[in-house]
Image (tube, rainbow, N blue to C red):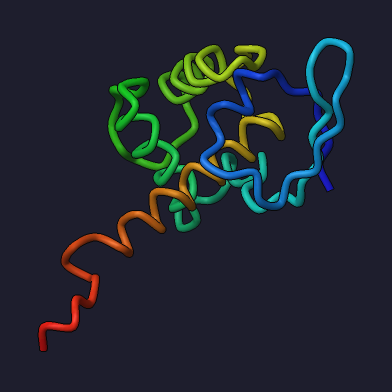
Length: 127
């Protein structure tokens, strides 16, 4: 279980709060969740870069990452994560901290759900 203090701006970025436990604090929120994406994923061997690549694509779609889509956690990726964190009301360290990872996980899941219900895959009953 991951627990971290988060802001209203971070909560506003979430497409859903499913799997999130919240407690109101004087200056924000305490959030808890089960982690799927982990900081270790950013240091993975070359054959395990798919998770970081998915985050790069997400950051690129938000206009925050302009580097090569290579699945590497290097200087460009750290800078993009820092910009993402700043836009999300998190400390902009560029490090994949638990709140950043949860937000990435949630946004990636929402994108996957949206793409799986695209007009091409919906059944309309027309035969």
